[in-house]
Amino acid sequence: MDGAIWKMKPVDEQAAERLAAELEIPPPIARILVNRRMADAESARKFLHGSVDDLHDPFLLSGMEKAVERILQAVGRGEKILIFGDYDVDGVLSVVMLIEALGWIKAQVDYFIPERLRDGYGIKDEHIRIAEERGAKLVISVDCGIKSNGFVKAARERGIDVIVTDHHLPGDELPPALAVLDPVLESAGYPDRSLAGVGVAFKLVQALFARAKLSPEQIASKQARLLSYMKLVSIGTVSDVAKLRGENRIFVKQGLKGLENVTNEGLKSLIAVAGLSGKKITEGDIGFRIGPRINAAGRMKNADIAVKLFFSGSDEAALHAALLDQLNAERQASEERIYRQAYERIAKGALVERHKILILGCPTWHRGIIGIVASKLKDAFGRPVILFSFADGTAYGSGRSISEFSLINCLHECRSLFLTYGGHELAAGCTLRLDDLPAFKQAANAVAEARITDEHLRRKVEIDAKLDFAEIDASFRKSLGLLAPFGVGNPRPIFISEDVEVVEAPRLLKNGRHVKFRLSQSGRTLDAVGWDRGSWAESVRRGDRVSVAYGLQTSTYLGRAEWTLNLAGMRK
Image (cartoon, rainbow, N blue to C red; front, side, top):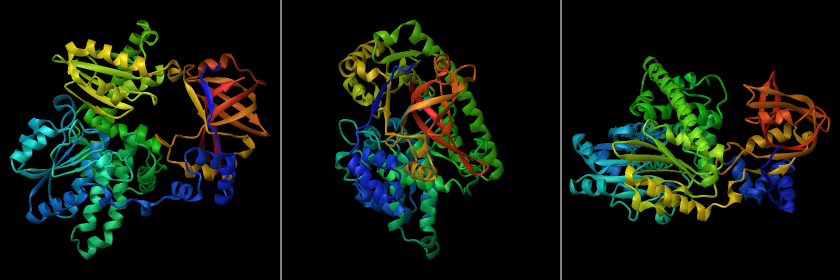
């Protein structure tokens, strides 16, 4: 009933026992920490209880001294500073944070975010006219700019300084900017290379506040302001699917705490339309409810809507939030349509049987949606997917990949075919002439064929620890909660329980897509749900003995914790 590979992660049992004793945590939690390379008490404590005091000195990032000096010089001279951002959540919230922070130290600030469909990603050479028209003497890029060499050269020729803050990989050479702040660079010297764009922007703000001449009132409120910005950093970091380790983990933990007490009218309105008012907000709520609504502005219309949301009074904020909610609903409908069309083409064309990377496109597919659909198709078919939208002889692509295959490296090997390209190992994009798309398909398939094995394409369930239902108690719940927030780099743990009895016949949910069980072991009975596993209902009966692999989800009902097993696999 489950064709996936079940893989139990090996563990140093002695190290786990020692860690469990030193930290007074349940052994299964200690095994998870050891497997995630935190076998000593110090690193484990830092992971479980890390705080803002554990953040690195921002001046460790190469270029920070020059950047701060030039920004403070612009503030002192009253020069216009233009912030240039990306249109996704990461870029939008970076812009919002810098507008607010620079305004707080009395800077003259303006911003520009390109339109996805008109301008495409990043700073183009022709955008120099925007800086000139706005009268900017200093441009600061956020979440973009690392490949904008032409723009930076044009700015220098016109006496405009540029500070690049980014977290993407550069091209063959760095832009000749006044300062480049990018932790992924080998020359960056920064201890944490996994920051999202909003995290890099936060480090710049942190450094600015350390060097700016602040009034006594500002000094007194500086730390509270930085903590408040972490709400934005947490939303941008989760939405950009950055690794939740190191500083990112601290940002998100602190930001989630802050989201329990929001004063910004725009953010409050956004939380309200997402149906989260008065609720404890989780990283899942950010990823599936808050982030998509911010993203909808840049995907469906103009990212300015999302920026203005955060600088609006209550009535206007409510209108902006309602518009974002509407745009998100339109995005969901478009996404569903594209997904159905792409899925049918993949199935009818037997593409899975013929290719290890799925590449297809259509002129009617919305350019702002194809990346999300590529992600869903990647999950459905277990292999990399790149979708293209066509317009005016150009193919605009967005792709998502499996962990075993670096999409950006694949694109790099095909770079001679592209007009532009960029991204990360798991998510990347490109543009090319439509006439060159067949050549790209052939080249990308050759790379995938050489690097992706049949084993890579089999669904895997990686199991963190064995667990008996009797071990799922209050102490376990508290310790499991300390492992959160979960995401890339710190996935929600998967446990295995063996010889479990099915004590209630399975029930199909939502048109037969999902199935719900009642399972019992060691005198403890728990609900279990198999999402998109409706077929299991035909092969499991009451009284069966099974082994289950699952993640644990808890909710509180009448003051009592209720557990649900989210099934990743089941075997008789």
